[in-house]
Image (tube, rainbow, N blue to C red; front, side):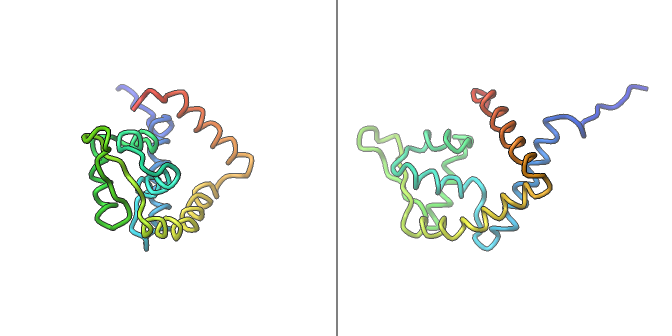
Length: 146
């Protein structure tokens, strides 16, 4: 009888589970704001780079460009983001955070910070630093993927 694959110790499985935990903790802490981690990242990335185009912004927040427009549409429907065609290239959409979007992002900062502390709470301080350094290295080593 062939032995089954030990998926519970596979890096991909553990990363997927860690992602599930991260999203669940984020949603628990930010629930009253009804925002996803990607939406929060988009608001903050746009506050740092107002007028960014959709394709560049999707790359910055590491989100699939094909479905990015629908996420922007939801933020736009909430009155948090507005988009308009780039005068130099009408096919390209440029984005800005509205004053309401900036206020919403500001209100979310504490709960988001709390979610990040909770996420790493099971680790000792030196383990937290090591994990973050290793995750950053892993991501940098695979930047061309996805």
